[in-house]
Structures are given as C-alpha cells and as structure tokens.
Image 1 (cartoon, rainbow, N blue to C red):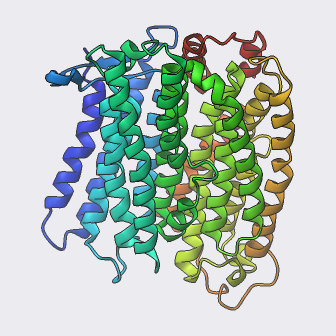
Image 2: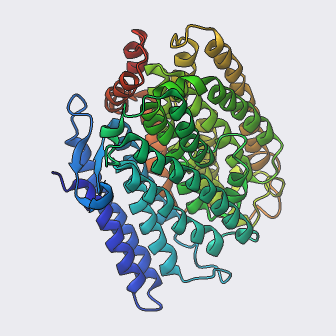
Image 3: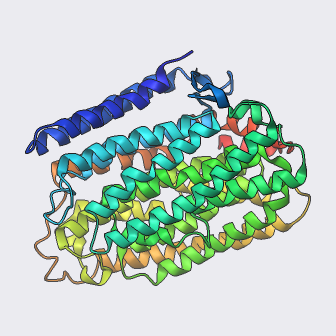
Length: 511
C-alpha cells in the first residue's frame, strides 16, 4: 500500500483550504503560497515518477481503502505509464499557469477575490491528479464530475465579457455527458455482478456483445464531449475564448485529455468487442474533427478561438490513434496528449500575454509585434510552430507516430485506416495555413500604433515560457524517456482488447 498518490491529492487540497482561509487583502501571499504548493506537488511527483518501474506491475503506487462498503466502492488509486505521464503533465503545467496568471484575477470585473481564484487552481490540480489516478470506476466518475466545479467558477467569475454564457454551456455539456456515464457505470456494476467498481476486476466481466455496445455508448459519448470530438465540440471555442488564459491552458491542456484517456483506458478495455464494432464510427468522427477543426481555425478572427479550433483538430488525431489499435498509434496518441498540453498551453499563454498588453483578442488589432516585443513574439512563434508539428519539436513525433501507426495498422484487415491516415495527413497543410497566417498578421508587417508601446516579457513571464520551450524542444529530439513509460501500458491495453501487436511498434516508438 503506497501513500504517494493520496499525498499528491491531499497537498493541493490542503493548500486550497489554506489559501481560502487567508485574511482579506492577502492577495500577494495567496499567489506565492499557491505557487509554493504547486512546486511541492511537482517535486513529489518527480520523486514518485523516478521510482516507477516500466517493466513492473501494470498499476503501481497502489492505494485502496473501503469507501462505501455496501456497494463495493473503494478509494482506489494506482498509475500505469499512461496515467503517470498525464499526471506529470498536470503538475508541470499548474505552477506555470500560476506564475502566468499572477494578475488574471486582479480585474475589477472579477466576481470573487484573488485568493479564491488561486484556491480554485489548487482544487482543480487535486481533481486532475485524482481523475488520472483512480482505479475505482465510481471514484473516477466522482473526480470526472468534481473537476467541473473549479473550472466553472474560473470561467464564469474571472473570464471575458461572455463568461457566464460560456461557463454555463461548458457545465451543461459536461453534466449531460456525465449523466450518461453515470447510467453506464451503474449498469456496468449491476450487469457484472461482482460487487465492485475496481477497474482491474471489471476488465472482461461483460461478455454479451449487445450489453457491451450499450455500455460503450454511455462511456464514449461522455468522453467524446469532454475530449471534445465533432459533433460534441461546440462548447470548447466559447469556453476557451472566455476563460482567463491560465484557465484555458488547464482546460484544453489537461481537462480535455480526460476524454481521450477515458477512451483508451475504459472504453477499449472494458468493452473490447464493442470498441471494435464502433471503431469505424470513431475513426470517421476523428477524421472529420481533424479536417473540420483545421478549416474553421483558418477563418477565425479571435486568437483564443483559433487556438481552440486547432485543438479540436489535434484531439481528432489523438482519438484516431486510440482507435487505430496498434502500439505505434496508441503510444503516439498518449504522447500527443502530453505534447499537445505543452505546445497549446504555451500558445494560449503567449496569446494571453499579448491580449493583456493590447487589450484585444482580435488578430486584426495586432501588427509588427516582433519589433517591439521580440522575446514575446519569439515565444508565440515557437508555440505556433509546435502547434503545426514542425520536425524537431515535440508535437511532430507524436503526430507522426499516430499517422504511421494508423496507416500501417492491420488490426481489422482492411484499408480503411490507411485511407483515414491519408485524409488526416492533409491537416498538416491546413495547420501551416492557420498558424503561419496568424503569426504573419500578429508579429510581422508595419507596427500598429496600438502595439508600438507594447512591453516585452517580464522576468516572471520568462520563467513561464522557458520550461515550456525546453520541454517542447527536448521531447522533440528525445521522446524516448516518455515512450519507455508509455509503451508497456499500451501493450496491456492491446492485450486486453485482444488485438495483435504489430512487430513494427517497438521500432517506430523507439524512434
């Protein structure tokens, strides 16, 4: 029995309470205390991660305690390689977001205090760790829904002019998906007849193909809304555009990954026959999302909405990799979740820095920013290049793995996945269009009068972008440490889904 995971959840919870209890007027102390707590969580996670054994038991650092014994509900925690890298993504982004959001809650239009905003960030961090670590499906559902609360208040109380609409839309979509999943969770418990919600014990428990299909649908729709996949995506552009930049980073960079993580963990392993049956639908939705998100992004005039639509395209790639059911594709999809968090997180933050200086989210209000703020412009440019998956940057590795793994997948003995990969590859061209066009209009050309007085990155902001740039470049050239952790977990998934593991997987993933 390990206490690592309960500790990682408890530290930010305690920190949130301490920040919330600070006396009125302690805004600066609240910020520094929040930053300190997130750095402690990061340090603890790194210590734990170095003790993880990729070739050991699938779930490590296991913690189990009875929670609701009458229904077999346990407070069950444990991580495999997939969950571990997503927890690491969460705890790396959170202190960066705290440092970047130093003045996000200072607006006189904010509904609540500064300390409340930072307490919400800590509460959200605890929920993010919990949702990836939960091995009890009912506990996963609790964290899945609990994440909505701090994010709802961060958008609705500290966001833009249409924040109330965006927050309510985000909440309603998510609650609808959560309701479907709750029905499926209860049905899974009843039909399995094992008096437990523990994931390892429920794998293989449902054998009837029709039952699998109905339960798969309940889980899949909830995860498709969270991801989001087309046509369940419409809440994301509004929420991301109206949220403070830091909240948008956690929303798109981490919370949305719960959807694709859930597909990979629960949909495939609990309902393997249904997963194979619905794979054509999932692949079609993924490819449509890839192309649709990229095309719509080209026409956006708002920077944050543009970035949100690019994420819809990226999530299409991730979902396609999940359902391609080859090791290369699924390892690439998991790596994509991490790399997308860093790249899109940095793009949101750089856009947030520009908007905070100019006071406008509209691309047309910027021109020639690189001449007056070269470091900020350079950060924006690097993040944009990572968003279009330029070779040498981290997103390229994962996108390439997804496409080559999908293209070469023989899981279903047909050329359908090959066609899907070829169509998806056209998004590479579209990505170059929407990113380079935005970069051209914002950074280059004659310096607009409204931009001429723009200041460059402050010392604090340099500390925000520097680790993200290092991670984007580092994992672009050397993704092996992450893949060594991810690959064994993917092997377990494919074994439970009863899909042959192509021999090319190890070679493709290692490179």
